[in-house]
Picture (tube, rainbow, N blue to C red):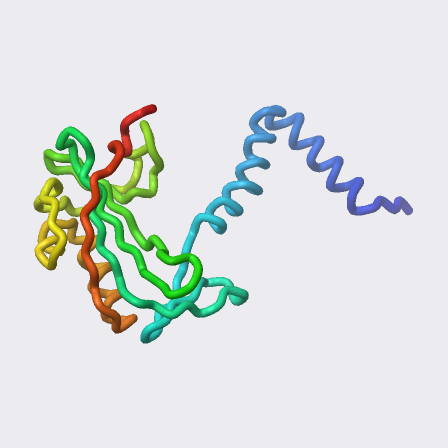
Length: 180
């Protein structure tokens, strides 16, 4: 009778797979299987909305009192486009929670601001285009010039939280696809 411990069997299995698949391919696969789910979990946000309060998805996060929802447009230098962001303004820390961002390029392209900056700015998913990405409005007219995706999320959050909607327009330092 042969008794082999579980770690030895696992080590033999990993070594055998390492030889069959090629060392590099196996290590890349192992890395992806461990790291990708962790990154997705850490970078995903789920919010619990209730009348006047917002709470993070984790049970240890506390409820924050909400003062308003802020729709902010940042116009890029040189008239190349804008960034529309939706924030929930709270009384506690942090003072503003970013819910969604949308990059709007002049000429008819809008993308979720989830891809990153520089060359990754255009890697976010395409969404319905903002009707007027360069108009610097700070009133209710801003709602008609943002992307349909931003409009829908603003309407949903304002309705669920039952708080007022505020508008802001700022001059952005640079476009998201500018490289320093």
